[in-house]
Length: 118
Image (tube, rainbow, N blue to C red; front, side, top):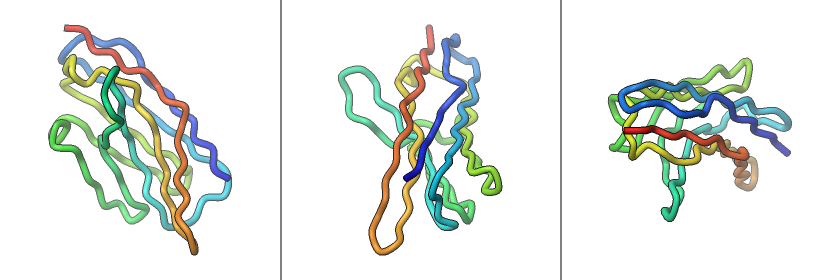
């Protein structure tokens, strides 16, 4: 089992910045993918960014150039630096860890609220 604990959400004005962090603990494989997803009210959960244990990243088009995902494999943490925030970035942000050994395992954090005022 894996536990994910997020931190760093809050309220910020448009154009501002926030940094989200997620700490993973438990049975973590050396090869995995960690990422951030978000869900706005009335909308489906969507991918924001992912990063593999090898450091390969993937971003949603809507955040490219504004958000940066990073990780520390030694500490099992993943971060999301969010710059130039827009009101449409308002959502609950969820940390995710995906790993596979014979079968796939998918874990989610409890979510952290990000609110961007105009």
